Length: 490
Image 1: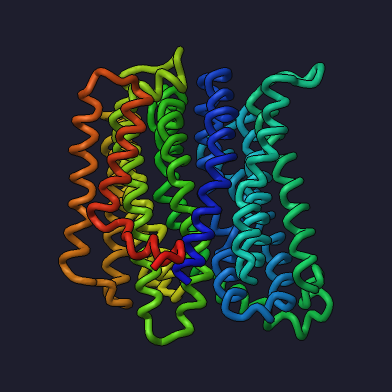
Image 2: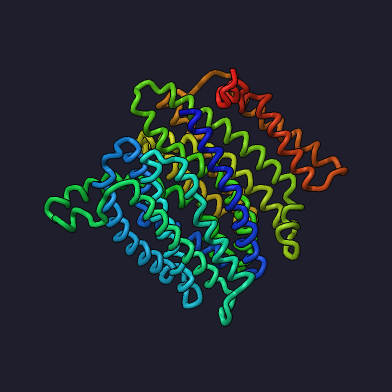
């Protein structure tokens, strides 16, 4: 399983590095530079779409991925019923979010149409993830890896045309940008659904519509089993996305500060892509390994994935932090400022604990330790809300960034504690000393690398990445015997 994981994570990273950075920095960044403060509104509304994510997903993706991985014969029975449930919940999701935006937050005719488009995009995104959860649950990991970036690949086309070759009479606005994403998501959903139909024979009509009396018990069972996943997902989105909404609402010129925060968050979001890839691949693998009461192989896969992600996250976060001024001048030549790169220098460190959550939180999800995870997430929400209310009025976007890092670190430590409690992941002081030792090595190396004035920022950045690679071998994040075993060399 370790070799299969490495093969697939390499494939996932390769595909996503080919496509997603082009969208993030080639399309999304170009839109922000062209539109300016309106992008702050877009960012705030985008974060608002996550508040009622519990209804948009209801934990169905994680629940389905776990159960189909363990019992693939359940797909024809579960798929139509879960799809219908998603449709009904999506309607509730849209209505409640619009009511919140209009009634409680005071959004009006300018904001609500854009919010409606973003809500529809969110529904399509969750539909695609649900369809893909069936594909990965059936064991088609590599196909799922290819599909993970299909939406962004298509957005390069739809949004790129809008940016650089717009049809006559179509003005470039933030609404048209959102609609271009809608078109790409619709095409992606159609492709993924067609592929799934080639793999499995199933009906799209739920049993509780064909035979209400017989199907109703199954409906209630699925809702009951999905609900804990839904609560966990709601809490995760709440503490991770609350800052963007609070920035825009708490400050008199909130749209300006939200736009600054969005610029830094873009790089964090791009980095977090790596952690999400690990989590999406690990969930069905962890679920299958849990069939074995001896958790030795499970612990081995968890530590392998953690060491790889720790090495990658610390290396990348440190390099971005030290190169933040040059990166922002490159990304936003007309808008770069000390305020922006200070926010980025703090916020990027949220990537490191977020990576830990993606490994150990996925491990706990695979064993359905959702209630205990929920307690940690609830405490994280309280901490995040308190810190944001205290820090945003005093420090603006910098305060939101500090609150994000503190919250992610708190939640990550909680996940590690729960995993030690249930899986006994402790392997001795040697491994645990290697983890901070690697981080200290990278920070020290990067400090001296960026003091050297002989190379440009790109040279500094490459040297910083090289220092991380060297440190990964020195401190056992990547081990030579595992490399040899992977390559088949004795």
